[in-house]
Image (cartoon, rainbow, N blue to C red; front, top):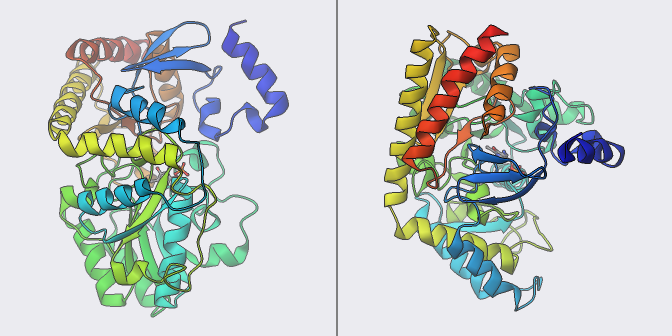
Length: 429
Ligand code: PMP
């Protein structure tokens, strides 16, 4: 038995399913999850001393590679002043200033402790601001595990086969309307059938949680103008795309201005951090400025703020990070495409910047039902073949990969080689 296997056996007796977040259990790909001991730059190291090249990067945050020195130093410097005060600090002001500066639509921002908290708060604010109850979300988008979002949700919710979770009340489900991604007509129909009832439309401007799915030309613009026409707020969930697809996220890259934005992952440099922000007149409904309540004992935690500030400052001061991420993404995806061609496969790769997914299907993937045409058994074998070759992928077809600038050209070539071999091994059965 490997140390990871021993740890998992014990974990299953103590933690539901042996893990603290479902996808980590490897249910969708089979085999035993790898227990990680440490990570540095582009590499993960497991409890058995094996090294892996990182293509998940903690599901996004480690965009500069693991244990990036300026972030590590900021945390070391901060801990000597104690770990939590539950009182305002200078760092929170600096963080807010930086976010407002970097993210085009954000005029005011509130820090929370996870992406889930950010999206839950954002819809409460939208409901409080508009006086309406319903929200529209898209099939296959994941916005954390808040009750309202576990309707037709992507990521772990689909991987684990619980798209509509027990424990969510019928009343909550009734307030969540869903449409297929990239389908403007479906959105308009919902708005017409629920006149003056929809508080907000929330979406991942580029979806990561049904695998990587891009907005078709005109889709984001269309959703923006439908929101304006029907008086609903537009919420961009940029927990994955924020500070990744550009310094100012997908909204900067696509030139669309949402009313509210939710953030997470990179914003904490790997620490548990989220944030929501947007137009000042909307954010001013948040307590104590306004009546919509939202709070947090550890919100704006000084250690987490120090890590996040070091990360965001580096990104702001080094635009070449984004140039390099584009370069790595293009090289890798070109290599994967060449590998598919050599293997005689016509599978779909969706790609933008440092996010991409190889879907085991010939269909174009523009929404969740198309993503679900993928051959999941083949994906499982491919995943295991990559792992054996020391490449750590997201353990599900319905996830995006996240690249970091720590990947050298040499490592990119190694991954391309592993991909080709793994495709052949997976096809052989
Ligand atoms: N929104 C999106 C788009 C996400 O990808 C995630 C998590 N992957 C969340 C919200 C929830 O964030 P967290 O896991 O930090 O609660």
